[in-house]
Length: 248
Image 1 (cartoon, one colour):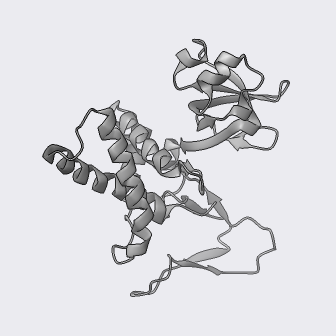
Image 2: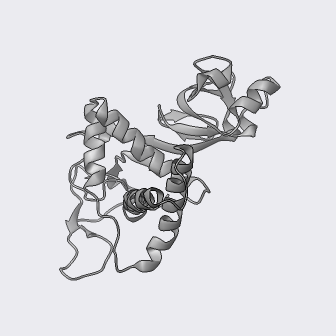
Image 3: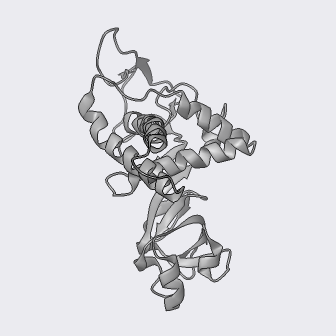
């Protein structure tokens, strides 16, 4: 984890560059890089600036990296695929996106399975002995990170999934493991209709935007068929994020 003035980002995290991050740069670079995605590389202590790699280097004047201010950086997503590998975190937790939870070495707690038929959210924990207030009991090893409560969170999460797919297709073992872990997650409770409303609307927006970019003609038979198929695929991914992500 890289520590800045107050923010922390894992190396390789994908962030948005907002206007506040770029005010020290020439105006043409500010205009080109505003609202663009970049990958976090390091934090420069002397200048209090973050070194990031723009996703489209040509917009940064051809430079592979640029120094930006912390106050104008917003997390889009981060894939810590190594945590999905055996031994990379813990294989004990079914809530992979939320975090792979490793029990404390002293085993002061044990898992309490959810009773059959219970609608409780997961299992609980039972203390095996007295625990000192503030004592660490769980070690978190998430392999996916995303912002919550921001406008672009749904499209960011879909982009993270596409990034995992791309890494897996190029033969990356960690990416393959992360994708397999994610695909194995449940996509929410179909009976909880209300929880699907916003994700379905956002999935529809994502697919319609992609189809426009691909030059597909709205209202045609081909368009509607492709749209329906793709919306369900995107919705499944978004619901897995929704149902398995730990609260921030």
